Length: 457
Image (cartoon, rainbow, N blue to C red; front, side):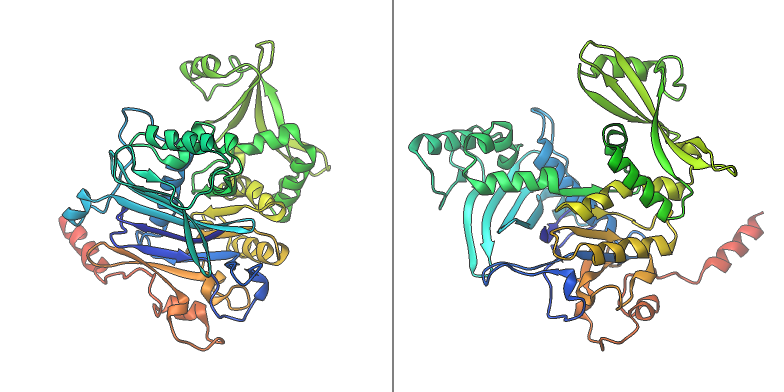
């Protein structure tokens, strides 16, 4: 689970901002809290809803998470500059590193992991065990050089293990995170008793999922192909949202003859890069989706994802995905993640969850998640403009956040908890009238623009 995320000097965030999933003293909806297992443990909220005007910075917060996750899970190729996107409206910031930090819950353990980097160098990196009583370092990276990475309090099973990890630290390039290097050099397998390195890597690779408005859930085709039960569940979810979709299927096609929405060059590239015994997933510009498989003998098969509707006689009729509405396609892309949230301990961060969706669907997604995952270590964090979610009967005050941008272009992030009000106050009304910020300030100059346009014409 995510406990806190902070970012500084990234895109519109000049100063450090923090999204906290640690519950306040709010007493409503106790089921929305995963309680601490002991006096030293840290509790966590199951949901967070982030509001803000267009260009306020709420999507930049999600991009910051994604940027950091990419560096952690994919590393950086030798000789290639690091991705670096500092705050550009204050010149000194363009010479400073960006800073990212996650505080996370992995089973019974809690960790703080973060780093500071610019386009060439990882300036700092750290991993700590944390609890309510304090913190203890697993490793600390400061500056460059052979002794930049140290293990102040780490206990090793043998001198050889200590030498192995020290060698890995000294061999870590300045443009690559040590956490990634530990996975890449099999440290997490060879020294699997060092649980912080194993658990934090596993969390970023398999627990944290980030979904943008144009993200395609490529596991969908795999689920339909390999697991009929999952396919049935997805179809049921789509049917419950009144999409008219009754089932999902894969239709086998000839990659070279039947697939006209991919260029010949793209097809050749696919054939050249796909490995024997593996599958690849392709989305075309018109939203058609294919699964392409090369079996152990080298033969290639292609399958197109289809939806099924029933005609007036009750007979199934197959549809191409691109014939579905934008809303139905959006549900298709987030539905598998919703099923994972109900059955596994995952964190889903969805930017613009309400994109192309009716307000009732957005509200239902959040309410069903909160009511059906009590006690499970899963979280749903979303950005939205959907004001109907601002209902005290649905969410807690400490689950509501606002992004705001100043006249200088600096984004800030703050919680509804910072505002003094009675628990029975209408949160939605207060938001819409601008009491909490996070709404656009629209200047009354549109009529003058139109008159000027008419004069010019």
